[in-house]
Image (cartoon, rainbow, N blue to C red):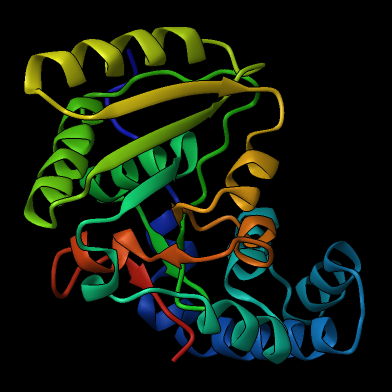
Length: 234
């Protein structure tokens, strides 16, 4: 089992304040400008990456942080407050939120986009592997749900991802042991299921945020104050 999630050896250099603070803000501004004018994400990222001499990992970061102004306003118009989610049902983008929490608990770099959502640099590559922080991440979700009287949680995982079945078993057992009203689904197209749900979505996936009926920014309330590895475009 991998020890931690997300952070790589050169990340302190690639995203350290002295090296990246100004460059990443300008790169995100430029890429967002291009996206707002209809340029494709891949071509915009490549153009900006070349302009600022960013490597692939830095380009991945600015891709997650960038969004056109109309997309930002669209997403924020459907973002729910903590008061609005109390006593409601939630639908969780399983791997998306779980890996984000694992990354946070591992003290990996997180990146807050122009839409306010948080993203990391972890990739599945078709396989999910538990880390030391997996159960602690699930505990955070449990505590959050209890504190806000969430009536039901629907976790949705990508069925083709290896070990998704094991995660379903783990969460079912966890929910039973803790008396939680959780349901776990494995879907071939989880993004579509989440986007079309009437429940409040917990995700930072841009495609879902552009289409979901409503969403809540879970990481925003769980990330520690003054988290040392947070990169923003403010």
